Amino acid sequence: MTDTSPALKRTITLFQATLFGIGLILGAGIYVIIGEAAKIAGNLLWISFLLSSFLALCTAFSYAELSSLFPKSAAEYIYVKNATRKLSISIFVGYLTILVSIVSASAVAIGFSNYLSVFLPMYDPIFYSIILISILSFINFYGIRESIWFNTIFTIIELSGLIIIIFIGLMFGNFSNIDFFESPLLSTSLNNNNNNNFLVSIGLIFGSSALIFFAYYGFENIPNIAEETRNPSKTISRAILLSIIITTIVYVLVVISSLGLVTWQELATSNVPLALVIEKVLQNKVGSLIISLIALFATTNTVLMMLVSSSRIMYGMSKDNALFNPFSKIHDKTKTPWLATIVSALISITVIIIFSNEISAVSKIAVFGIFTVFVFVNFSYILIKFKGQSSSFSSSISHSFSILNYKRVPILAILGIIISVVMLSQFDLTTVLYSLVIMSILFLSGILFDKHTKIRKKY
Image (cartoon, rainbow, N blue to C red; front, side, top):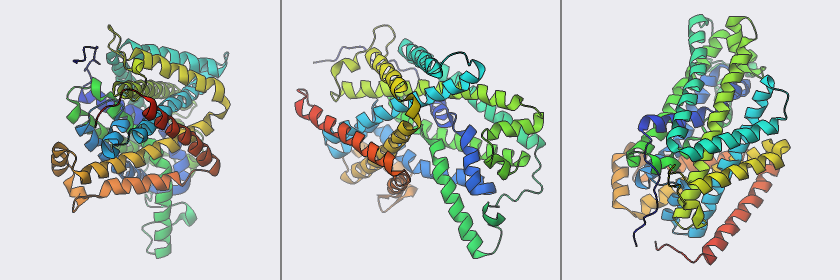
């Protein structure tokens, strides 16, 4: 029987998909994390960003390859299903990805309300969060074209703020007396021939890279817009890699420019490190206002993209009979998954209302979840490659990044698993226990859905 239901509208170009990824990666994190990382790495911060980029690329390459073979919404669910042939496991990963996207949207919405309260302190910040979710969900419902153009404009604003910092730093910075290889501990340097100092500096680079890695979180959501993207088999994989490369260049230039104006010690002790950089030149508090305004755009953009992603994951799973069928319903006029959009908004608002005072703890659980997903995606890549399930996939691998394989062994995917496991080991015991409880519930839900659903696709 032919499916005559409306389909998602393919309007997204490579430029827009790349900006989608850049907007997700940049978020508002860079405006804070640079100071926290400076405490650990000092002037070696730029090397830490390069290393973090490589760590992110290890998993990003798996996403890029898999998205070229499976250009579908609910990407992680699709990858795991085709690799393991276990519907319960793939449903678990899909549910976990939905949870991560919705909780992330809620957490960033609260971040937005905190910034907005600086300008409009008369209302409760939770009110601003709920209004933001409601408005952005309407944009998400109204159409993907409108959502993507909204993202494009706001991402350009985000980038403009960082480009201003780069320009100010390069124009007014003093680089002549900076040792870009100096680390905080006893002011040691990689230029120092002392082996102990060298090893300490290397350790500091890896320590700060673990923190900075979170600044690259977001690229994994790009595949979830595949069914609304033109030529998704090529566009999505290119957008993933381009977004990481571009943000890495911006991050490194921001670091170098900042160190040209202030010391790493000043960055490390400031709550608003990039505002400090601007104020160094302007000699007033305008920098804080500029950064706060840009953060409003950054957080708004991130919330919108997370809501888009969560609704598309619901749509993709429902379309594949792994979630209740109504979630795959497409609105006749807007060509968007209207019920999935509404449910994503309602759950996000519920999280804000219930967990507004514990959103930091909930956010840690979400981040724990995404690294768990990374383990499954990299493992799925390895399984599919060695099983030789698809000649087209084998062909894709033989022509893409083959230099990164050793005797058909996908080195980067293995590194991606190792890095993700290491990241998982960095969380506190409370976060780990809560995460395991939540994931157990999601896994049991997947088993129950798998067992009782009447519509089972043949593999």
